[in-house]
Length: 136
Image (tube, rainbow, N blue to C red; front, side, top):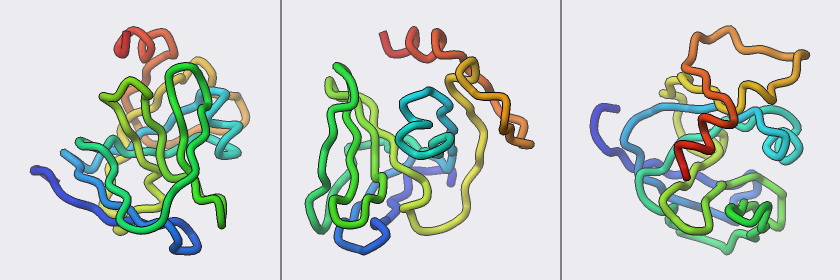
């Protein structure tokens, strides 16, 4: 994807449907403890260039910290998206989106990544301090 592209997605049961606009096809893995607890492993996300648009259903929101919230389907439990409460950043779980034309190219919170897994892909890697500095 070289220009903005709209992608559609849904939760596992189809109760929640969404649409996002992406500037590219980049996928990032987050290894922070909160994401690993939420997803049972690293969270694979795409950054939405604009706010996520819910086209059907109403996701449940969970305030996971003072600065962020996570959305999920109350019916099937699918993890939908993560966003900063102050705005300016939303990421969507890549698994809920249609298509497989993704480029896995970034890992964040690599200093929190446990030793029992690793990815073979060569990616840019950022520590938790680097990520937090980028948003402060």
